[in-house]
Length: 164
Image (cartoon, rainbow, N blue to C red; front, top):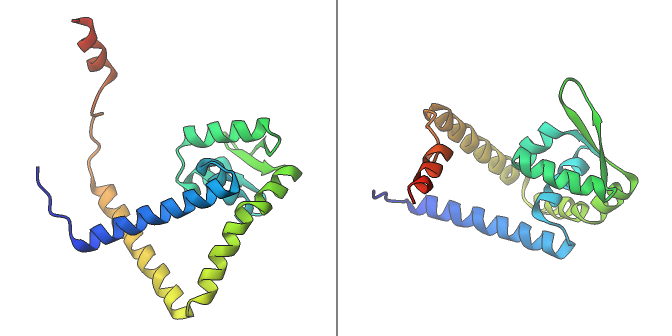
């Protein structure tokens, strides 16, 4: 299968990858894993508490990854969970968690705010408009994709080994 990739898409993917690597390097310098950073960032941005499902949506973390990181942070006394409506859980920073979040991801929020503050207002508006348009178009295309069966089913995999 051959697919020609446009220069625009190559540039876009390069910038996404480089941006991810910069955030990873920031997290390393702050002594945080990427998932811990994402959770602390999501909580700090909302004042210290947020529904677990909203943390997953905001951060892009899978439910399993978020739950693993949250359990670890809970054991370390950084956050705690409390019941919310229905099956939802509210994730809350402890006092130690608030201090950690301010000291670490608080720096990231400040950096990002400073960057946007330095750009002309029109550029910021245009950047957000284009990012939102891309997201909307991508979501429409994703919604139009048919659901496919798993690429590798556990049944097929185990059958392969039964014949060995």
